[in-house]
Image (tube, rainbow, N blue to C red; front, side, top):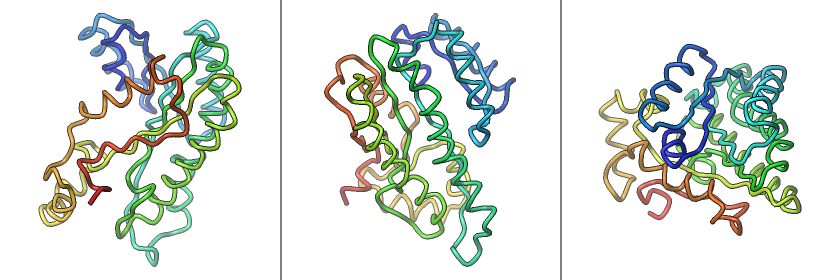
Length: 231
């Protein structure tokens, strides 16, 4: 998504917990797109860290931000009888409390811009579910409700808030499934298109929601799931 936005002329800041990873990725995107791409660090589980990110973004973008994408998330897979409280709280802290902290922090920057767009990366497990996903699915369901609530709350400011719900994509968070042929096939059977998504296939949804042309779309959830939720 960062590369897609940069390729359309956006100045981008890419954020990671890992400073070196953010720097390398920003340099690679800038090199491929010719647009400015800057690195920053944040720990979404830390209120202080998220507030510091807000200060950094305000400095980098002169107090205004058109587009903010919250794609941070973790997944710890376990049936409920094996979920420790600390495990549950870790997933909620990053996936939903982190989203709340991020939204609260970027709000002033978004409403100061020509057009403000907050995009949450949710999941099909926010509205469907799967065994062993109690912690993750609960957090993503809450993220969809945060999206809808902020869409209503921020509408008077002209700031839209929407979500993208990907299905199974070939990303790092899916590695435990992709590395297990039986589990991978079980997932694949649920996808009408019969395959996992490529990360590039989510870019168009992000570009639409980020653009001025989506000005009448808020509180929406765009499914990019190969037909999983339609079946």
